[in-house]
Length: 356
Image (cartoon, rainbow, N blue to C red):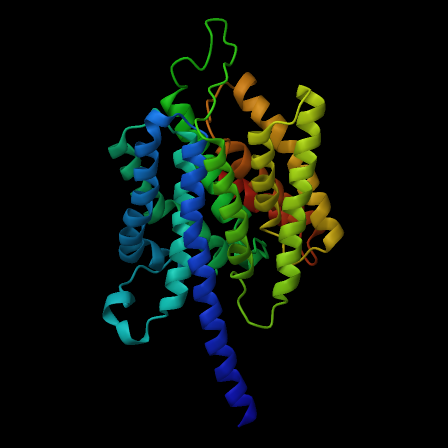
C-alpha cells in the first residue's frame, strides 16, 4: 500500500513539474523575441514580434491537428507515429501535460528561424513555414528520437533537444536565409560584409537572460521520471553556458582588440545549445569542456557564414543553434556515458538531411 501511495504521489509531483517546465519553455518565446528585436533595426521590430507571436499560435493549432500524433502516436515502422485524433476522441484520458510540454518544444524549434530571416521575409511566407515545421518537419524527426522511432531503437541520445530542436531550427534558418538572400547594404560591391548594428542591445541582453533562465526548465523539465538528479542537470547546463560565455569573451577580445558584446551573448546561448543533448550523461568537467569549445566555435562559425558563404544571419541563429546543436549531438557520442559516437553521427546526418 505504501509503495502504491508513493507511486501516485510521485506521478502527481512529476506532472506538476512537467507543467512548470513547459511554462518556462514557453517563456523562451519572449526571450527569442527580445534577442531578435534587439539585434535588428528598429523599423522591423513590429514584424519580428508578430512572427514570434504567430509561430506559437499557428504551431499550437497545427500541432494539435497533425503534429502531436506524428510525434508520439503508435510507432509505424520506426518512421512516424500513427496519425490519430485521441486529443478529440479520448479527451478525458488524454495525457495533457505531455502534450503541452511537447507543444512548447515544437514552438521553440519554429521560432529559431525568424531571427535568421529577419528584415526581408514576407509575413505570410513566414506563417506558412511555421505551419509546415509544426506539422511535419519537427514531429517526424522528433519521433525518430523521442517517439520510439528508428534512432531511438539504435540508442541515439538527445536528452533535451540539441538535435531535435536546435539543430533542426538552425538548419531551417540556414535554408531560409540562403533563399531570401542578404539584406540590402549587407555586402559591398566587392563582396565584403558590412555590419548592420542592432538597435537595442539592452533588449537583446534581456532576451539572453530570459533564455538562460528558461533553459533550466528546458533541460530539467525534460526528465522522464522524478528520480532524475535535477540538480546535476541544472549544474551541467549552467557550467556549459558560463564556460562558453567566458571563452567567447576572451576570443573576441583577442581577435578584435575589444570584447564583442553581441557575440559574447551569443556565446552563452551556444553553450546552452551544445550541452542540451548530453546534460544528463556528462560530468561537470565534460560540461565545462563542451561549453568552452562551443564558445570558440560560435565565433568562427559567424565569420564563416558571414564572410565565406555570405549568408546574412542578423542574430546568429545558424551558428548558435545549427552549428552548436550539431556540436552537442556529436559530443554526446564522445563524452556521454553509454552513448555511441557512430550512432550520434548517423542521427546527425539523418536529421540534417531530412530537415534540409
